Image 1 (spheres, rainbow, N blue to C red):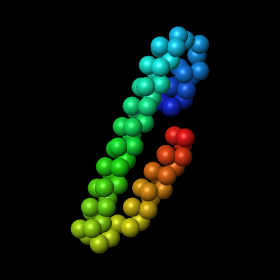
Image 2: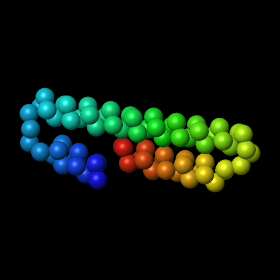
Image 3: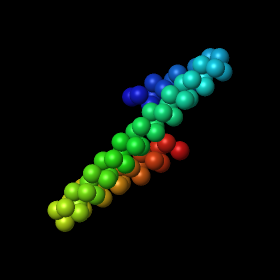
Length: 73
């Protein structure tokens, strides 16, 4: 839903300075999301190392990160 709203805003006719501001905002949001995903991945890896299990959860998280990364391109 947020992505669609941002896409709508970016598709509107607006001054270049405002467009740049929106683009920077989108970039910061994507960076924050990816940093959060990386932190979750590290957390799962830490749990995996401690418990010797949770391989399925790690695989699921990795698949989600790949899908998100593909969607950002």
